[in-house]
Image (cartoon, rainbow, N blue to C red; front, side):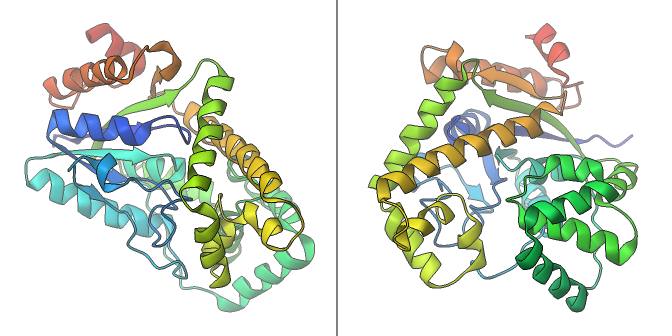
Length: 328
């Protein structure tokens, strides 16, 4: 039986410290980072997407960052295809791939080798669905999806209009739901054996305070100018991005900047809850609670010990949390 590629994954909600931990593990394990963030793939959105800076990367190679123009469409299937190539290249050079990000759909699709049917775009159907979105609203379309594919609908928020439309489009084109397609594709198996580390906090307010502080820093670093520039270019991606769309009422004179930023904090907290909901469905996640540690170094030491044991076993061990903890 062919050995699977050992894959280290650092996931978690926004502001939980994924970037720092991913970089630290890469430094200790001779690794390279592959991003799993659906907004960091776009150019010109560095502040809103919390793109890691050169200083934060600390010389560690990062892949899948800032390579796509905002007007370009990008699918989960395209992400998986490109990320798979990155991983193959990293492994061929004797380095350890480390997936870092908070987009649960990207992570689960990659590590479980979900294969997406690539149907030719039905422009007439897509236009019809987009018009219905404008006239009926996202909630109505999400309810329609719930009737045909309740599992997909349960994973999506009504603000995630792109994926709601895509799920309906696929179903009406093929008669097969994304849930069923995912189930069938998993029968093919995955080339990866993942060690999934999930960052969280026991106290919700601890994480929320980190989120609030991050939004303040983003504002100080030029978020308003970035959002104004992107929205002026009328790019759909910018209009959907958390950190940009919340500033639109301010630009229209409908609320103060203070109110807009306060709303951004609230929407980011809600987004973090959705990220955690997605991750909690996967019983392979080894949770690390950031508010248990007095400093980053001790947290990183524990995460490193998980990875070391995993890699000592050739990356083939059962990575269920109970099994991992028994071995360290």
